Length: 243
Ligand code: NAD
Image (cartoon, rainbow, N blue to C red):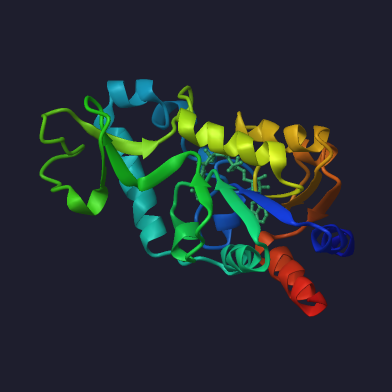
């Protein structure tokens, strides 16, 4: 399977990579679904929705604080680093990540869309302006903007839409790129879950990497079962040998 993926990647001049929580699992960050997923202990609908924040902003904020605490001590793993190397191998490269942990950014990857936002960034619930959390004095939880309104994590919650400019950029990539690697995502959170099908129906190749089968496996040209921290570095290694 890896051989087939490498054959496709060798003939590709533009590469799009889509990642999900599975890519950060080997950095010690819990996923939402799959074995030991975050939602086995917490209900998504109690925490990651605009309604939950309206009802109980303090609990939602504390849950994000808990997640930030885990992420602060985590490091990008071999999968994240391999994706950064892929960016160096391809002139036309883009990463769309659903992760909000900021670990891809810490590898220095340049062409990236954080399509579900970033939990180190906060947004005023009234004025729609954003700040990095470090720059906000935490006198109370949740903290408030200078205008007096609550600040919330600048992430896309269940039931919310992805900002238009990010969707437009994503669609321009889906319509033009030749090959997609989709790694560590359960393929059930829309609209990103539909991206592999959109590319495949245009004739692009789709390479999936996951520890288990997902709805994307039926669409993929090649489906590789394995950890992203093992499979991605091996792909990069083989691609480099062929250069
Ligand atoms: P998900 O939790 O629904 O699915 C994770 C997938 O990763 C599963 O299919 C699982 O089998 C696979 N996986 C687990 N470990 C793996 C590994 N080592 N190698 C390869 N695959 C592995 O994640 P998702 O599809 O990204 O769900 C979408 C939502 O979850 C997004 O909105 C995202 O923001 C959010 N989320 C983000 C983080 C993060 O930023 N690290 C963590 C949890 C959830």
